[in-house]
Image (cartoon, rainbow, N blue to C red; front, side, top):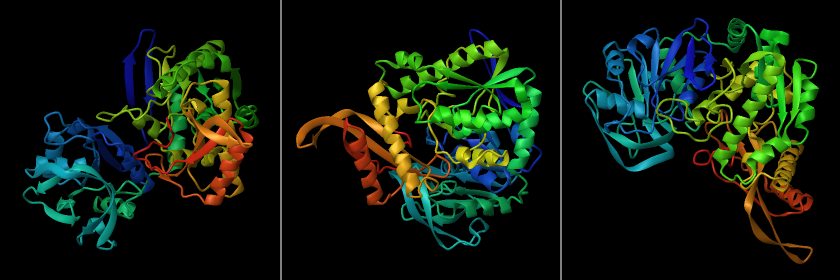
Length: 525
């Protein structure tokens, strides 16, 4: 069992992650890339179980892996503080273990085996064209491939015994191999690489991988492990979003009436969210609804920094869960944490913090729980939706757009107060309503509104008016690790803008975000 154990002032908390059923296993070695978990997800989509290990993992810990992927990362291999693992690399190369180095993983293999890695003339981010050679890794693919690059270094000299299998205009050695050891400079796991899934599938064929990983097996295994791990009572924070709803359904299967779901109305929710939760869960689980708007608003008064907002909200959630747990005699907290929450919160070795999710990086230092159980922590959003559908949750729940745990507080760039939250809530409602009217809600990943703190001059009723600015953000994504802004029809955007300025008196200007992720995150804050 994988677990992270740490001491705090009050209690020993164990974050529980469950072992997986017997299956062909591919090890992903994490060197700090924001896409590390995306690699693991893509492999699972191809029905092969993958597990992530830290960059300093010992050979003995991965000796049962039939194949290995070396992730990308932000470091340069020629720097003294760069993450390396010479023992692992020696084992992979000497034993000819099926291996795929991606980006930093390519640099690592080249450097370790005697090649030369140097700083590039310029950093390369985005889509480029790669010429691929005839090789099993590119079986069935055309010679010219559109791939996604994100690197600042390049291989100048190949190590002895390796052969080039791909190149670009600016990168002579964009891919190379020796035996079963492969490396590519681009990121096949990112959907911007047109044939990335085919490349990964070809690698699995090279590794003779068994395609035996299916979500129904995960559900059966997770229910069994929750029953083994939680002997008493537990509480779960139920927000009404996809992740917490699926986690509640999954753990309810295991614990029945020993699970209490706590819904906290902190005044930062979308319209009708409390009624939505009551509709679907009131008769299915022990549901407690806590009205806590004043409690949260008083804590957030005068706070503008988004990271501070997240941490304040994360702590207040925990304090309420503690209070409710004491009332029902529960000693375990269940959370709907998923993979993107963890990676963006910088919990993996060598990774940077993108933003502290309220249920991961924004947790308080002390918690009055014996255990924190996160049954979905190794799943991506699309996997979570699949679990929900398998458990019989209605599409109205599993198809909902993602909504941040801190709620509208992180869609308001200024202070959390009644005026700002009213504007944000109303504008978000309008965006979602227009997406639904035009048949777009179920085809885009997420659509919402943001309230800026600045004011601009407008003209209302032939009079000058200083008013607020609202931003609309609509994106398409597969997993939330990358995203493209949606090129929405101008007539639809015009309708959204007109409704927002007409129905929200304080708003005089509406803008549309035309940034991808990266460089922007999906949420504004």
